[in-house]
Length: 319
Image 1 (tube, one colour):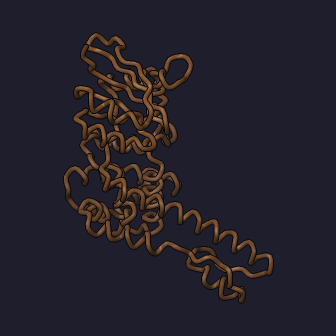
Image 2 (cartoon, rainbow, N blue to C red):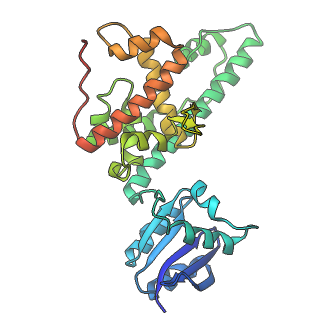
């Protein structure tokens, strides 16, 4: 018996295995406790293992690769189409095993432990920014009860606190440590520094793309890269008629948000001689929000090209 492919459905405590032989017949169906996984796969000859890209999947991919197996991570939405009637761990493992055999399947690059650690900083920063916004909004609401207001923006909160006269008990707005570490990572990462030369792409966006896209050559083209982020129009075409709709929103939400925010900032400062003639022409024809999404799409394609070539951004010349 030769197992050519294994689908592994992971969970917190119980893991399900589904393996097939060279005739595509199921020859391995088994449940494992979390503590048994490493020992079981260490005894198997090297084979291909598919895992759904979810929590802790990168950890298991690194562990199984260390045992000599070839591990492939797949987005959950691409596996769903292979799930047969009903749903349980065994059916999910079988669907993973079937999905990974498709020649057109798209896989998620396995991140190193160092990249995962750096991505943790980005996650913590996002959490602190959200908590900071919640705190500022709550503080503004309480201050408004006493008729005290201030201009919008986090930088105006100090003025509001000063005007309140009773600043005791207000939590400190904590962000300095995370920001400093992310900036340190940005300064030592060549890809992040290269991407930060693009107008609208700052250090946070540069670090995010550098960490989340360890292998840009996994995408066949710049358009496939933009589609993976979810910044390309949804297709509603039929009978040879091309009907592009709204952007799909099916990719990485945080990368898409950074692109749109960066594009919006570029548009707010758009002046002749400072931005491309293409953007000026677009702003003359379309609303700013639509132009921001179109610019974000273009920025995604530029990012992919720069990650492939390693070159810094060159500003387009006016005709």
